Length: 277
Image (tube, rainbow, N blue to C red; front, side, top):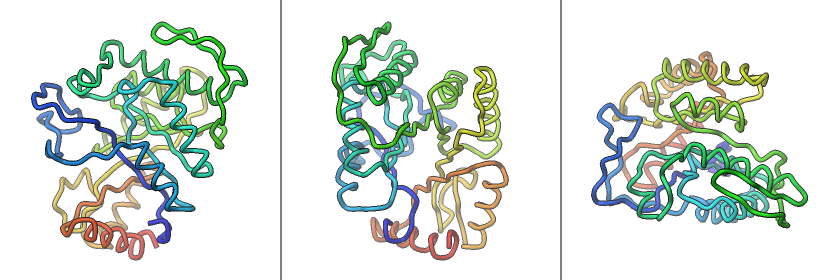
């Protein structure tokens, strides 16, 4: 992918899979999560640290890092390390999560997780920009500390995921991008207008933000069409033009293809040669 000219490589975030889950996944009609419970999930930050050492150009993103699963200062250290060792290639996608049962296994609080996430983003900003940072919030506090090295990117790009008014305002306040996932285009456009309105509420120029959309890359048209870039190369080109005309700036493609890793790589090669090229 680095050699092919792919813009960025992305990882998702789950630590474990509780046997008994009542929480509802927000991006399917029935609230079920599309992945099997025995699917393997590598640690997102550790995986990107490994990929950083294997690549030189491609950017490295999280889609998305679940802030309530992690302590903020230790997480900030991992993120700063990743940006430094990759020479400034991190895109920090963040969200508040949906699976309360997973947070419980991790021993992390689930109440007020939106407010906790906002404080975590404030802590990241302080640690990444201030010479002697400190923080005194409702949920997190620490006295003045030294925190080095800081990320190479100034500011470190933060892309916020979510489909609620709170997420839209979080994007306006803290984000450099809004990262939607597996949503029909009309829904994405409605959410993007809400993000833009939230920016205007705080006198921020919404043109400063990137609109990103995660979809399936599906050459065999196996998945839901509204959640995919699918079909022939010509159909994919038409779909990408439709997304661009609708205001989408960045498309994260999740390859769906038979044949394991090799099949998915073939799908990426075909897209880069016949669609992106």
